[in-house]
Image 1 (cartoon, rainbow, N blue to C red):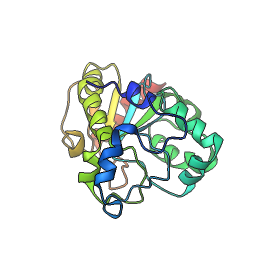
Image 2: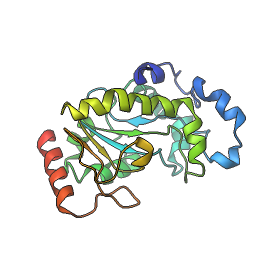
Image 3: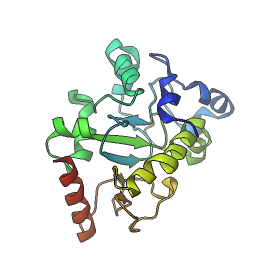
Image 4: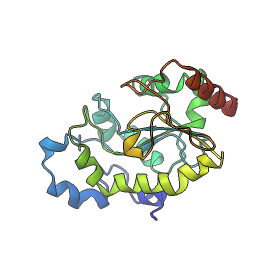
Length: 214
């Protein structure tokens, strides 16, 4: 089993493709996979090593600000720290709006949320739209995420050591929507944007997460 933090800790500051993914990308058609390889990659944001709450998504989006990150010292340093697994969620005005929209349901105090919630994606490369799930799953970096989640993170959630909430791509994570898992592993009903639907089970989930964060 590959340790996810050792895997990403091998990245050099400013590196745009993980060394383990280079061969896979050479074999792919760039127009087919749609990943923005001029940006800096990462499969997680926030203090993944220690966060009591982990939110699962599919892959990081692309809005244009990621290009500036790749070209600036501030942006490159931020990603380099992120790869270590201890960096809080972003607090800059342009970047933090997405994080705030996904975390405010569980914690309205973003300053607290950014230190206690982490985002974990299967994919590590930014894209406007996921053109090819097969291309994402063919990348070694994606397989490392799934291996670590299923061998380490999910067992921790089942043992109630951490709360794990899948908000996108349940099937790709190996989870079933609305299935009741042991402990604090959740795969709730969500809309296409990854926001919780209004129902009694999700109200219960929100209460559990808020109690852990307070």
